[in-house]
Length: 190
Image 1 (tube, rainbow, N blue to C red):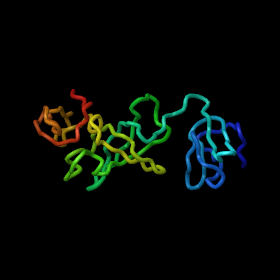
Image 2: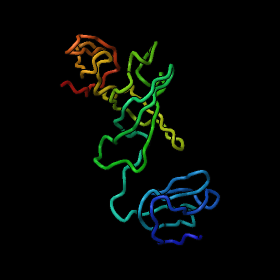
Image 3: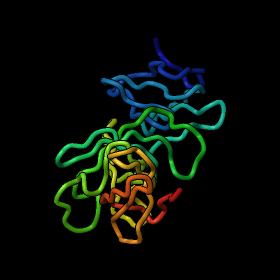
Image 4: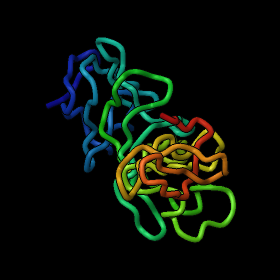
C-alpha cells in the first residue's frame, strides 16, 4: 500500500519504512516501519525525505528534551530508577504515547549520592527534566532545584510525609518516621 500526500490516516497506520522517509511530527518508527501517532492527514516532504501527519484536532502532547514532567517511581536499582511518566508540566493534554523514563544516580542531585534510595523511593511522585530521548528510552534528571520529589508516602505506614525544614528530610505526621529524599522546592505539604 502506497501512502499519498494528504491521505487520511489513523493512529497505528503504516506510512512507510525508514529507508523511504524520516519520521516527522505525528509519526514514530516501530521496527523499521513509520507509523502514525495521530488521526490526521499525511504530509510528505520529498525534498527533506520526511513524512508527518497533521492532526485533525489539537495535537497530543509529546516529549521533547528540556520538558519538565511529572511521574511516579516504579522501580529502584542500585544505579538507576524507573519512572512512569504521567504528564507534561505545562499542558493538560494526555501524552500521545505511554512513556517510561529512567534517572541515573549521577542525575539525581548535584554532588555525591551513596544510595539512590536516599533520594527517592518506590511510589514517590517526582518532577523531572527530560535530558535525552533515544527511541522509546527517556533519560531524566532531578538535579535542578524545582525538580525532585513533590509528594512522598512514609515507607512504614503509607501516610503522606511533610517537610521538616532540613534540605533533604521528610517526616511522617502519623508515626514520626524521618526519611531522606531529594526534595523539589515545589514539594506539596498536606
